[in-house]
Length: 134
Ligand code: CO
Image (cartoon, rainbow, N blue to C red; front, side, top):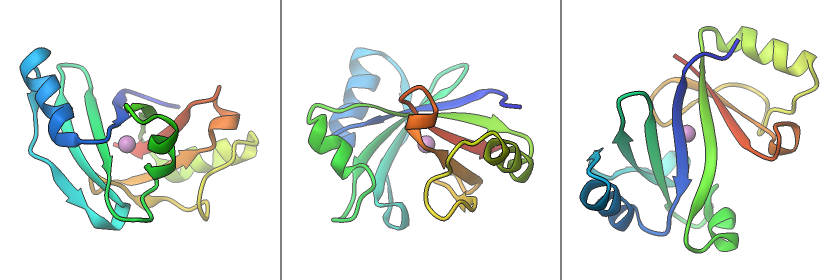
């Protein structure tokens, strides 16, 4: 069901500093920071030949990554995002298999303008999983 790895997200205290690290020390191609107030984050995308790295900084008081960053002040791996062809079919199969979908269980428009779901890390080997319709 899952297809390509779309991105690995890393929560960071500063996307500016994190983007500089990926650009200057690792020699990667990085985007400008994009504030996404609806999602409570500012993101920078690092484009690699086979996937992206999403650098995520909390934005605002109700940011979904604030608690994670409080536990991991230097930053840390936050989630993996896998692509699926049909998110409704993926949701049905996941729910039938007992996986818990975060929030109200309905797909939301994610940071890239495509429908996404997040799966509870306790059902996914301790890893927060994002499913995105490619
Ligand atoms: Co993501």
